[in-house]
Image (cartoon, rainbow, N blue to C red; front, side, top):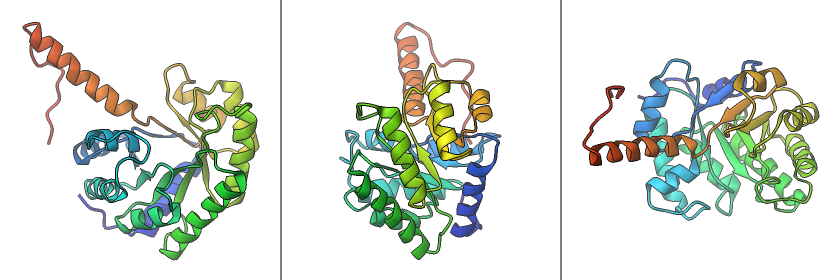
Length: 258
């Protein structure tokens, strides 16, 4: 299922979804069939890949252990499976984030997560500038870079203050959205939204984080689920195996696939 809409138009559509006060929720996918299932469900407005899940499905540990060629090929298959705009998780950029984004755009991607990996701030901001320049050069000026800061993930001494500093620098460098993956509470989210502006923050939907309705009220642009969607799917598989081993079988709630 391919889209007749051009890449620049899909990028503008994806950017508009982030700018809309209605929260954009994306349940991450990792291959063609997960992309098809998610995109076919009512309410799905865009797809996002999960690098951890793609790597796991191909037998690699997370952390840029999967070769970029394999990552891009899997992302291409996901793009082909849907007519919706697709944003890809490109980890830290595989040594050349602008080139990784250029290659992703070449297979139809119109947005990306790229980690700062707590590089020196000047280097991380320059990476954002290079990505946005590469996207513009490829004819996709509205490319939705979800500039990720690892301030919480990497355990900065004051992760909130570090995320604020880095996020503002990334926005100044041209990123339309900043991703702060962590189990954030309402106060932290409010502080980040106040600093970045409404509809500029992406969070991750971890157990115990504020509800989607509350995130929308707080001015969050987007919430994603990273590898959790694959873990939920694999949990269902494990539960089926346990049921079969116990003498049961396929649950009546199973849905047919087209």
